[in-house]
Length: 141
Image (cartoon, rainbow, N blue to C red):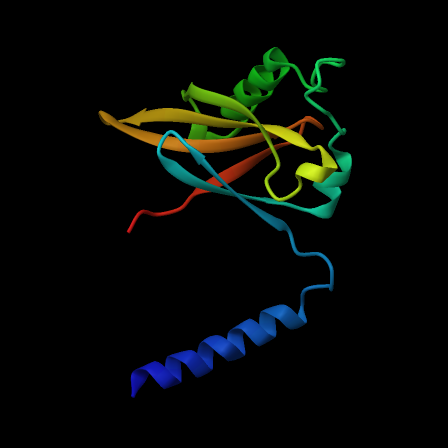
């Protein structure tokens, strides 16, 4: 009895939300794996357009160096209260999945904070445009 009411309310809420979203403004969902975690990030059309094209054919270096990506991650760590004191644990240079033909790449970074003896993982994506966005770890079931 409760489930149909919940579904009706959920449908109504989604309809209300979608009515306020302009068409074509949905972000692309990119799903990755890093350090045994399933990571999701959302890239807008503007994010994708701002990222320079790069092909790993050895003729040109990537548009964003590893050193610059680390600098951007460290700047984000200093700026974001939740990340203060975090340390970089892992950093990978990856093509944007499902958009390989556009030749867009980014750095996926795992940083870890320590709070009361507990370690917590956080994930950041550093786009080759220099933009840093938070990525989300999907919960494990």
